Length: 433
Image (cartoon, rainbow, N blue to C red):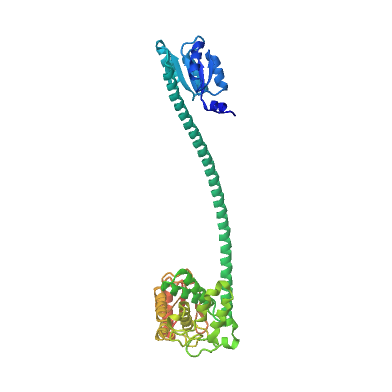
């Protein structure tokens, strides 16, 4: 493309319309160097050209025989509405000029005769105005296009987000189902392990779970966090798992730390710690299970730990399991009442037992706050309340069942139990929810 062609493409397209060729020629001489000019002597021909070619500026005479300027501009505005329209008129044409302004939307008008320099100056201002408006339209179009693309992008993004959210919800649902299944399986495994321990030791059904729930209740009472309470519960549930590695002769000597315990039995926590350590998920239970037979004064086993060096879970298990043996232990021929057992534990506080834990046990059993749906409380008649639910059969020393699990305690039952204790000079322990 030549320099002349480049300059020509940069110039605006100017359409001249006048039925007098002399006027056309005069305008061309003045403007031909600055504009790409096309000229016509009648309106229809000019309009036909405008339908096929772009026009930037239009200068049209007012008085023409076939179509006057006002009519021409009205049609031109419909064809190319952005073109700048300039009316060429005499002062005697003011009435039709006003019509052209109203109907044809002319930008300005040029009076006859004109001054060439003034005409060029006017056309320069018109050109600047046109180019500015054209640039504004282009920017608006670009902005509209950008907004449209942004809208489409947002719609696509929203759909992607919706699809991703749906996928995540589905994954979460599947994960939740899998987690519930795993938790159910874990509970089944724990129940099986607990049942195995009870079968091995000869304790009654639910013995380990009762100890585990009471351990968790004390942990909560002491303000331990949920994770630690959960860990202590599991330790309580599995605290005797080491008994599976003991001989039948040792198991037959199960008892409480009164000095009558078989020395080999006292070391079952070591076996238990070794067993749980082999299972990654249960590894955190090791220390509490291992040190459950330590004494506060350092005389316990296996490592002779003392005071706060003994893990809190181990201290809690020691108190709860010994308390349970005192009031309901298998082969314990001298079962104590709840009140006597509490006094016995307190008499050895800070020697064998953590005094804070012993006091917490008393408070939990007395206050019976909400420590979980499956919480089981060990109480004597003095701690029994109307409306309590019995969780285990009340079996008398002669083997007869006085009350069955699931019964709701009534005032009559409490009175009947009190009479029984007076007549047989004994104390009854009940396990209730």
